[in-house]
Length: 210
Length: 210
Image (cartoon, rainbow over the protein chains, first blue to last red):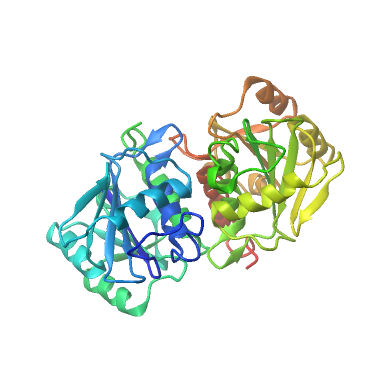
């Protein structure tokens, strides 16, 4: 199981978002939608062993977490509007501190990065923070022990604004290791593609479920 | 200079496409939009040394080619709707066999894959066809001579339907070598990200222009 957490610094967390304006009034929700696509889709199917956790830190608050669960996902297509529509539906149900399913495979609750990481800490999951000065994932997958950790990893990424200092402290306190995917700073969705490809290459026979 | 050609088997090539329905009535235009984003965008800027050529093979025909030119591109954001909007504008101008600029950095003309590849053949550009049984690009970039070819490469990809037999013959006749990006068949946009990352890794100091 692999988990991707993407921090949406301005992503709207309540009310009806406009699918015609995901980058604007929805607070760069397009960034998060692209991350969902790159984490869950392959050419002829879906990666079933993945959760994508979107931390919506924008207005009107309080923060919400929307989870896309590959295993139970239905009615998701790779276009941004499709994942945007499922986020829209998730934001329209009454949220609580306990996760509720809004549509098949999509879940929503109140919560923030700190809370989520503390849950993963309890489960003793290895955590990885995408950062330019981190260890190169393609070098890491040369090592068998690292592959086992990465295959079970929780990956934390910022959005177009990156990760602000407070969140970075939370990530450090949770004990995440820094990893990188190459010499150039890329879009979050591109980073996810590169992480998954590195793992596909490390375990070519067991990494997908079409 | 690198060129990416994406074959849009059903992509609409005339009239006004609906930005609210890129996957449906526009003929999986979303696939092509994602390819534009993954080819041109990095975290804080744009790759200027890239052209993206979209072959629109759908209705009402005849086929058109829309080119996104990184060097002169303006008014493009990474969301699908943004590139979709520029494609929409390109389809609304009177096309001819000679390229016309529809908006800054976007060009349109009548044409098909065969014509485009013959032009690249005349320029003696190395051509690469993305295919599962091709040579692994990460192995290829270990070799200095291959890197020089890949850096100047024309990359040909299918869309969600792949590449049909007739186009595959055209690609073979043009002398393209098969390359692959890993053990799992991925979305065209994900393949582009992986090609560019392999080249970034091969030439870490000169591959982007932010």
